[in-house]
Length: 229
Image 1 (tube, one colour):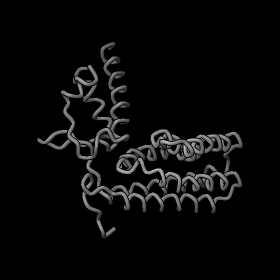
Image 2 (cartoon, helix red, strand yellow; image 1 turned 30 degrees about the vertical axis):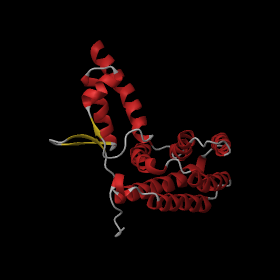
Image 3 (cartoon, rainbow, N blue to C red; image 1 turned 90 degrees about the vertical axis):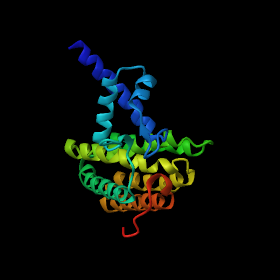
Image 4 (tube, rainbow, N blue to C red; image 1 turned 180 degrees about the vertical axis):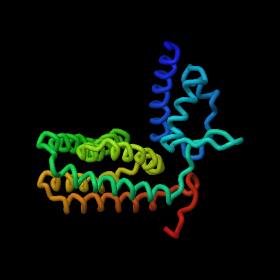
């Protein structure tokens, strides 16, 4: 039993490290993963590495192709657009629930996150990784305030794919600066309990993400854009 617990703990650690490396762009979509190399890199046996990989397969960040190997998921433009639309749908529903009972203390948490984001936007070189973590926390809180665990689970399953899609242009400072105003609009709308304005801000944010995704889509990494979308 102790060995199983130890292996599981190692797998969780490797999962977190490998997931972060994928999302931060150390591995690119389509890269092949060598299990033996990962064992040596992390200094562990095969079992926790495979367990971590299985977790990432479940999240959609890694795919195992029969008789070919294990790869970082090769994205399709259509999949990313659908993920963004699903995220928007979840956030819109969450907004309709959260706005009914969100507390002043919770709204203040959003304000504190925005202040940290403001501070990052005036520092060069711009730390996209730090900003992105705050951005993700900001959006996750809105879903959390809807008080529905099933919806949170759906939301958390979508975000890794979106993060992977943004790897190709995560250094573009202007994109983060442009969308930062959306966060302010969301904050003001929630504070004023104005659902219509909150949904408008979420819609604008989603549209901006789609436009940037299309503009910076790396066809060499991901393949061509499906023009029928």
